[in-house]
Length: 424
Image (tube, rainbow, N blue to C red; front, side, top):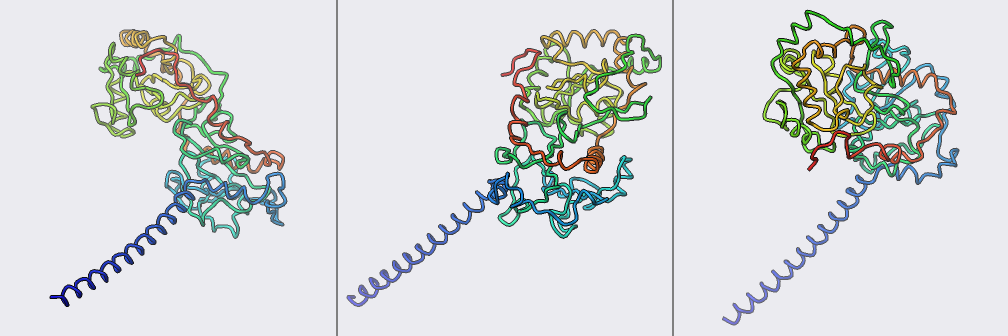
């Protein structure tokens, strides 16, 4: 019995030591994992520009701007690199990884001597590309080995691209000072303007670049019997497509306020009706059934007009807009109804009911289609970028956005609208 007890005690001591040893090993492994996770996590959260700035002071350009013997200004073809993905898509939804001069010619660009690519190995060195485009709407999650270029040519252009509003910009711009030369956004003060749509002047056979200050305005005497018959066959008043609810602009609250006075059918996640936006079925509904389409933006921000408006203008329907842009700079007069031109939802609803009961007046909102046309802006921005790269001198290239966070966020959006409604 005594031997058995001694043996059991010995086994217990051995097991305890094994447990203690294993516990220590597990704690060490857990600690190492925690340290590794912390390093990787913080490195992913920190924009890689922080490491770029450690190379040298921006005033000491010769220390970190590497100049190739062959100046990019002397090169006939300009090479443009997408350095970051566009919401996870490496090719930015372009036809190919590398799009050469043929791409620019097919899109009727005035200058076609450019190459667009996401292939960093297309040229021997990153600094040999004429321009690098960085998507700043989404946060960057580069690994430790994939930071911004350690060197850049003094002729190289770094471009900040963003089609989202400041309210939906997730990248930490506070680290990006003195980094970008140009911006490519929907904002009118960007070097490369990238709107969601274009207005084509049928008489001049050209795209009108906003801000557009001189429009024809011939709606007063406009009439068309065939179109009037189509108007009279429309049976529903207003529709809206929305996939994101409770957004910065509080557009869902405005719609609910309007529904107290008029019927509004809401399709998508924010309503009880379904229709895949952009499908032929949805387009048919807008063309034949509804008189008004609510093109309400998710943010009330400067110059922010999305495809909601441009797509509806390609249909036979009158858009009612709600946003932070000055719409007269982008689209023809009397082609839309601005909710912010009315003091209350009741006033807006009364005007829509008036047009519903007076089809001749409603029809006048289509006068512009005889003179202008809405076109999708898919690749025009790349045409403009190619042309600017060929035309720009070194002095203009050397500019930097000293505080791009302030440029993008400061005083660019509003929380209150001119039309007053309950926002809570």
